[in-house]
Image 1 (cartoon, rainbow, N blue to C red):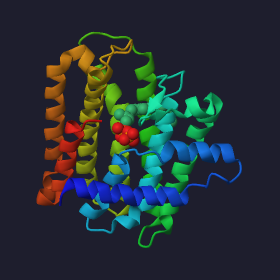
Image 2: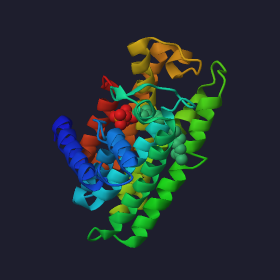
Image 3: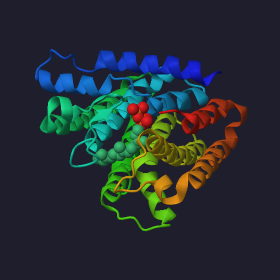
Length: 286
Ligand code: GRG
């Protein structure tokens, strides 16, 4: 299966689902619904929900069984982007080539938009219990996993350290620990939740989590490399390539990519799409 056409098809499925399930702009309070739709329906790559659907298919199930949860993960991802862009965090004016939420709707509304997306994302995951053949127990396990991956030991904690750390040159372990929490944790959850909802074995879940951890690290360092190439700006908050240089960063990315692929050895050839996705992540242009 060609990754490009797979991603295009599945992105469309996710976009249509979100378009239909998000409250319409004319539903009161209109401002928040406009703002939610503005941030969600604006051309994200949808990598996390695509991973959730890929896991269901890898394990021989129909991707539709995990579609509500996959869409929920995309809402949670969008929440993190809206809050990350705020002036009190990364202070970004543009996201996905468009003005950021706070630039269009104001800061207070952007905070509330993030809040609403987090709550709605959880609700979408709960609603996955209505899919035929998905047990309530597996939905509770999925919820528990996402809550753990977002908590102070994972994404939230990673963001705390990301906005507050000072550059200690050569502290590779520390920056990787930040990336593992702020970026890998949600990518991992996208895979784990897909697996839990279709009752994967413990061994399969562990393999997918290892894959998620490694592609997450490769993803974030690639993101840093792309940022550096794009505006060549050196942040006051240094990134992996700014500390270790382009060459070492590219090597690290390749190594994480290889390790990610190796983690899926128990699936053999069946995991070829996951291998292609790992390559896509490190070779992407944005
Ligand atoms: C988890 C409760 C809780 C709070 C959130 C704001 C925050 C704390 C975390 C932000 C973490 C963050 C923004 C990490 C960066 C991850 C990253 C590389 C995002 C870009 O992802 P892409 O390229 O984006 O998949 P698209 O636009 O394609 O969706």
